Structures are given as structure tokens and as C-alpha cells.
Image 1: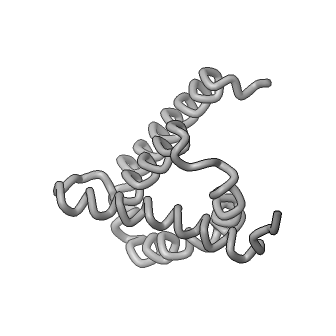
Image 2: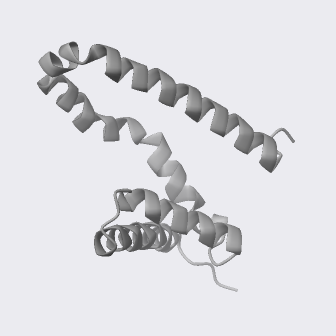
Length: 121
């Protein structure tokens, strides 16, 4: 049995991830949803993984690549914060309140998700 070269596997994984991304963007655009298409695409990918249509091994390496290089994706928001620093000072209390609440909500949801999926094995 011949093995597919690793480069081809990477391209397939990226193709799968970007297909779900594009599908999410299309859905968000056509249905005029306020939810970003990237989030919808991620939910589609999650459903495909849980449903068995996509195997984790097909996208695992590429997902790890994105996570390892995630810091690069924070450069544009960082520049935006610097650009609107004056506005941020005026609206500091609501912004930081929202940050704290979203942090607590994310922490709680993540903990419950790990608990429900048996992540402590």
C-alpha cells in the first residue's frame, strides 16, 4: 500500500478546513446572519467531525498549525486598539466589563464542555 506524501495530506486538510470556512461565510451572507461566517463554518466542521463525515486525522495537523501560529492573527486587532486608543479610554468601563464577563463565561463554558466530554481521562 503506497502512502500519500505528507504535503498532499496537508493540502487535503487545509482544503477541508477552508471549505467549511467558505460554507460558513456563504451561509452567513445568504441568510444575512449577524453571526460571523467563520463561526458558522467552525460549527459545520464540528458537526462533520462529530457525525463522522470528517475524520480528525484529516484536519488535526493543520488545526495544530493554526493554533501554533495564532499570535500572528492578533496583530490586526492590536493595531486597531492602538488606532482607537482615545475612544477606548472614553469607553473603558463598558469595554473592560464586557471583557471580564466574556472571560468568565468562556471559562465556565470551557470547563463544562471538558467535564461533559470526559476530558479528565
